[in-house]
Image (tube, rainbow, N blue to C red):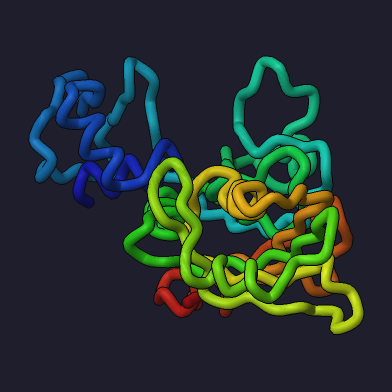
Length: 236
């Protein structure tokens, strides 16, 4: 197995990040520092990162309906509650969130130790689809909805939604939004830029995965079919 894939399979990071670790000299194989990214290793080889042994893990894929008040960072000295607390008893493997939902945002969150898949699902190149239910502090005008689809200028440049609509015909403070952008707090920042305060934000779909029949704060393992769908890229 190629060394970068071995590292990704250990759950340490995605494959492209593994290349950087190898290049920077952080990886040793059988006690020897390796900087050649094309190196192949056998199951019997001892691979270490900064002196700690790493081994390929059983792949685990967990879908969580994230509640409000939990952070998605793996380690945060200022956070009392992280999403890992909610899945603590799910597996012995070391898993981590794919992408981020801020502390106040609820909804679909994938956790895994599959570094390759996590890297693909968070890379802008693959344009992974996300759907949000937005609850604003006032009615969202059709004019502003058109602006959101055309593109709103943020710090990192123009960001646009792929689709937007009113999920409740009689309540225009609620908006359904489909977007591929994965920038931090992007949905909240789009609405703030247009003068709205997002009272509540719920991610109802991520990469084709939904929280159907999954209560807030609960989790489940992905089905074989869902994992296959993600690996084949059928999530746009």
